[in-house]
Length: 258
Length: 195
Image (tube, rainbow over all chains, first blue to last red; front, side, top):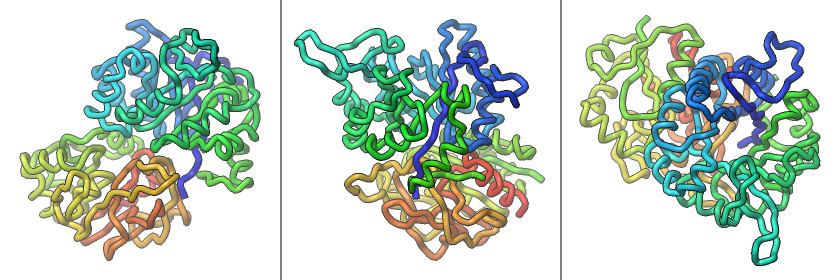
């Protein structure tokens, strides 16, 4: 049976993970390759590496990191951050990434999604959507797509945008609710459920995970195909083997590796 | 031992190379007939679309070379589909090593296509699955699949049961991505290289 996926996300700058981690058994907790390998050995189903450096030097360091990650780990991984052209994607896939995630560049130039899907195949094109529930100029509350780490609202409504990116050739959606992100109060279940039920491509839910039950909820009520989180894994508030065992005990299909 | 990865217009060959690096096997990435024929093992990987990859194989003569090989050949993902007779993906006539037609997953309410993620395989009957745990999980990304047939040596279930692995004579094939299927995928690759 196709399993639900657990995906740790690593923010990377100059080859190092940015958010602090407290894995005592790592030689170097900031080493993005070593941390990814640890998560893979613990049963993570995929990894996401986000490049938060915007400089040219940072970009080449990131490609070198992607190469080292691909050499080391034997599970799929997605890379994102600052990707805006076919050349960017080509360099990252050639370095060994399995998928790339685009966000602001897809909002700026939606045709990029079509171009990338045609060039590389939909299976490796993830479109990330950062969304926030806000009052529009019309005076009503709506889910609106945001860019720049969720700070800048766009004109796009989230639910139709999710459908549009699928129609343009995205192979997967990474949906981050800026309303729940960082709160540890749980994922945005209603929005995730609406988008997943409308989509014929997998939806990765992100933002708000604080405990194991939140993952159960996002896979059941939220109809998500995968759940992504960062700090709760980095700070070992939840260990991946415990989480997967918990979810399997609650009858969700999980890939158990131990 | 000489291992060749066949060079053609398929994506994500890099991951296969890295997987062989992890196992510690040297390989050559080539479309040269003499190099392919003199290899002990041939890997035919692939991420791509059936008709464009098949057109490229014909232009290079690889559509004739691959079916005539005598050493163990392993096709993965689209590589496996191109070893079948026909694919519904843009109605493509393929190499016909396995006498079976690749079909699109039927549209089914509430079930997403592509089949993307980790799924378990069952009913192993291959040397490549030796020493694997039952119901091992491997990583799939595909919208088309070969139905269960006389060459099926491992089955997966998504909407319908389909062929996760095929085997006939010296030809082996896997619909999933061995190279990113964790320790299970690595074991399958190692078993192939040990044949």
